[in-house]
Length: 556
Ligand code: ADP
Ligand code: MG
Image (cartoon, rainbow, N blue to C red; front, side, top):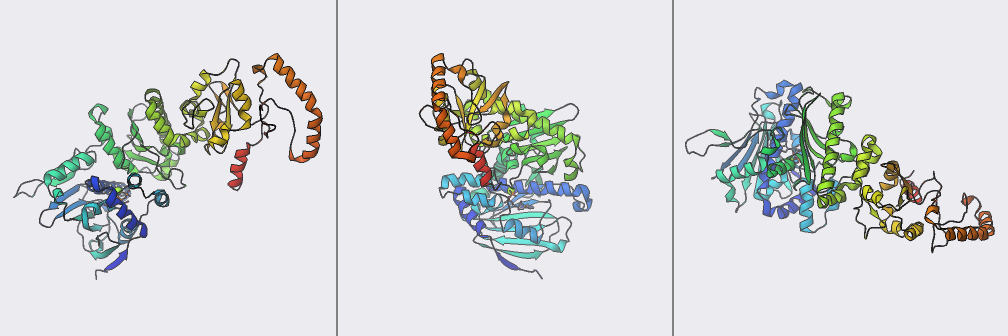
């Protein structure tokens, strides 16, 4: 009984397939990178599971990936002896999109092919990219530890349905067989396939084997360099190799913005290779967003999504940390309270922040991109990472009353450097939009006196910026809170005039207080306004009005 059944793809898979076939057309060869990447992940998983269950090895711990082709059958096969899949796994992984962020992904599609191609890249093209070159794909797989009779065959032409069948499969792991489309014969060449493997998958740490190109030989040779990229010295690694490795670990189609590669020696030895993506993923602010740093112990993959390795505000960082000292059987639970991990994390965070600083100091244009993509997340660090607040403060960029537009490009160092004689505070205003901040009547007096004010309007600003409190000894002061004393910027005549008008207004104030009653705490004259007749402020310890609205809308 082969238990054959035909199942339909989840609607989104169909949509994804259509998009992919169009957007990848000019870059079809990456199907091979994706399949090899999956094979490598599958072997990593097996290796990790086998640490606690050696039966999974099934007497075969000679891990490898094989790429073969058959000119007559017009097929290309990628095989691995990794973890394999059960029938349920197959349904879940090759029939649906089970990824986090799927909803956000489909919401962010625009219908513009160019833009969508980019978004698909970030989402990860993965297994389904097979259909860019194949009109039929067959997957033979058996889960490690399952009986030989419990193999599964999955087959589809990518048109909306797939079939499942139970088969016998001797070796554990997975074979993906691509039946090439009519005009894709160029891939049926040992030379061509070797070139693609070396181009995209050289950094894969497992041997990728291909048959020796000789009529009568049945021998395989390793075609990649099969060493962990991060263990090599920087000078031996090309930009291209760094980029390809990024695409593999980050499941990103695009090139990274920057990376830091460093071997840490001392109490502990470990290597970090961490990347800043070229753009913010579309689901960066979604609740189930996954962290992206992989933990290895002595080149053995332990786990990804290890939240313990990077704080939340650096959740966009991708890459690997490889420890020489952690025990191989380190578990998720152990990770939670491991002192060594804490030390690795805090040093890695320093390195990453150091990378940001380097970019800020040496490449303004790149930093502008970085800030545009990740500035909002980085500001969360002010709330989370007290130890690095000083460094974070230097990394912040703002739009100010001295800027021409909304672009956030003024640093606090710049601001402080051009403060007016006698100014001892960094002034800021928080509002719901840049326009609302810039047009606030509260700024009239500051503009008149030529005092620069930071214009804040990102949602996170409401809570993050007040947390900063001071920058290198200069306090931050919200212009909408309490008394703003600008008297030192006034001359005698102005002071006299103010006193006079305050005296004149006394009767009016008394009447307003009576009329407004409980609705206000106090009514007073102000020197803040130039042309507006009145404004509302909160006292020193009150909530900013826009923060109040934010909290109300969040149901607080
Ligand atoms: P991703 O690799 O980003 O998860 P893919 O579309 O490439 O997305 O793969 C989808 C899922 O299918 C994988 O997460 C994995 O669970 C499963 N899968 C794909 N190829 C293999 C394989 N060779 N061995 C085991 N599982 C696989
Ligand atoms: Mg994949």
